[in-house]
Length: 446
Ligand code: FES
Ligand SMILES: [Fe+2]
Figure 1 (cartoon, rainbow, N blue to C red):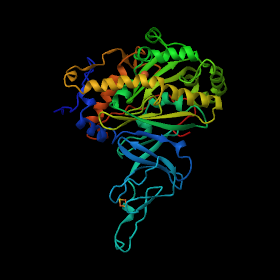
Figure 2: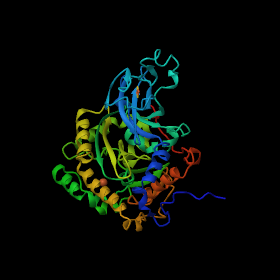
Figure 3: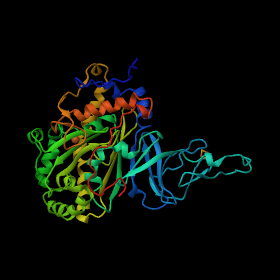
């Protein structure tokens, strides 16, 4: 007998989505365990902890986590919870320390998490404490292109398998240069929205010409950025909306000369970006091969479960609250004029005071708000756009929508959510095999 699945929240034939998953506390508690307790979660970047004994305080779901680089240069992601009574042992956002002393009773842990010192070990514990079993709780850690991921689940597939063919696309932004990337930030702020709404918005290009019209007009008038219209979005054949191995992505087919950036490129600095693209193309082509280096650009995307618009996080803080973390990431070896433009451009459009972000947040709040009403919950969300108009593509890995503007990725995202929520363990969660041709020299690590 086939077991009835517990969660059946999206009807793939009609796109009807049950609104209760945005407000229900029991659902949320199960998400923390079955999604945030299992998935590989993005938690930081190697450039945030460049030296031995550097630490960066981060989160896996709601759990406070210390990312450290130990004395031997190894990365650790550890629950920020003293093994004695549970006090947080680190209260700072980042720093450099060989040891972390708990401020309750003084148990002291080293930067690799081992318990080094216990006050009164001899006199009050009678030397009977097994310190080797009382180190900080460690997650599995791995990196892709300097981005640090961690999972609590020791049965999870490797990070490489988890990213799967999504990495073929992610390389377009994150793996271009031999010298790697530098992360700045994060800016942090809270919004009364459910974490899934900003995530599913990462593949929603339907809203752009409507929600962001005033920001688009300001960009056009002040910065000379070409205007995006609904017509240009609906008719496009040179952009793709696709879902691969749990992850939502959009890409553009572009000329070799086109700068590989969006926000930050304006009329006055465009020549810097054109020059940067020209100067770096041979290196990028060596790393990513001709097709990806010369012809493709990565657009909006989200890695399952909770990255938003690239190297940013939507951290769950209850069903009705999300903490956003906005980082800026750029190539370490980029010239200063490119770094300045990206720092300004990415934070000016997204981030707490970003012109686009504020438009988005208003929508996400309102969508979350609607889910609170028992009357409104009688009526499902309608993710109906483009049903039956996606599938395999001869050039691009994943489920590729026929049109750039589609709700195919959103249906796939909520399907992935069901796969995690209905699984007893990782053995029940499907992972697609890696099939992409990773042309070029770039790897997970170099
Ligand atoms: S709770 Fe940390 S030393 Fe007691
Ligand atoms: Fe938006």
